[in-house]
Length: 436
Image (cartoon, rainbow, N blue to C red; front, side, top):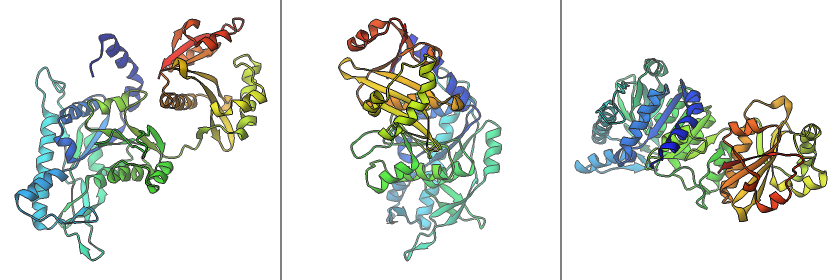
C-alpha cells in the first residue's frame, strides 16, 4: 500500500496515542512455519523490529510444521499422527530439532540484518532464546504412546523477563526440555498460549492465513467477546482453523486482556492492527463488566432517565417517549448492573451513503472511561456493515470530543437533503463528519 505524502503524515500522527499506549507492554507474537515460508515474512520481521524500537516488550513464538514435514520426507520416515497430533519417535525428533534450529537461525538472522537503505538499518536488535520452556511428555493416550511429543509444563518467566528488561526480543521455538535432559516436540500454539498466560502478557497476536476470525457467512468478526466466540465455535459457525481459535480463547479465558488474529500474507497487518483505530483483523476479549448491546423496548425508560438532564441543559434535543419507542432499534446502550449508563443512536441514510450519530450520552458518574469511544467503535462497525461511507453529527457543546475522535468540521451543505430541511437554524448546531 502506497500512501500520498499528506496521508502518510496524517497516519503517522494518528498513531501517536497507540505508540504511547503500547510502550512498555508485553506482546506475544505467534506464527507457524507457513508464515516463515511466505514472501511477506521479511516485512513481518521489519514490523517486529519496529515494535521493539518503540519500546514494546516482544516475545516471538515460531512453529516449524512444514519444515519438519520436509525433513521427514527427505529421510523417508513415515509420519504418524493421532487426532492431528504428531507422534514423535526418535527419528522424527531429529527432524524436529533440525527444522526448529534452522527456522530459529533464519529468524535470528533476519532480525540481525541491518543493511543501509533497509528498514532494519541501525536497529541493533538483540535476540535471545534458550531453555526457557520446560516440557513434559504427552504420554500414552487412548492406548497410543506419543513418545517425544510433549506439552508445556512451565515457562521460565524470570529468564524471559530478564531478557525483555534488557530490551531484547525473546524467541521461543516449538521445543521444550525436561529436568531429566529430554527434548520434546511441542506445538507452537501451546508454547505461545502458555507464554502469554505465564507472562501476564497484554496481548497475544496470532498470525494466520486468514485475515481474522470469520463466521460461516464469510463475515470478518472485528471484535468479539470470548463466550460469544466459543458459542459460535460449538455451533460450527466459525471457519478459522481450530488451533488458532484455541489459542485465542484459551489465552483470554486465562486472563490475557486481548488476543488478536491477523494475516501473515498481508503487508503491514501487524502495524495496522496495533496502530490504527479500525485495525485489520479480529480482536477477542473477555466479557466486559459493562455490556454493550442493541437497545430493546425495555430500555426506553432507562434511556429517557439518562438523557433527561442533557435535554434540560440544551445539550440534546428533547425526545418524547413515543418517538424513542419508535426509534429504539436505532439505539445502542451500555448497561452496568441493569442500569443504562451510556447510549447513542445511528440513523441511516443509505441513498446518500451516510448516517447520523445522535443522542450520544454518558451518565455523569461514568464519564472519562472511554465508554463513548466504545459506543463510537460499535457505531462505526455497524455503519460499515451497512455499506455506509461516512457518519455525521450535529452538536452544540461537545464539538471538542468529536474532534478528538477524528471527526472533521463540515458545512450544512454536507448533510443529506432530508436532514438539511429539518436543520434548526435557531439551535445553530455545528456539523462534523467522520469517514467510516
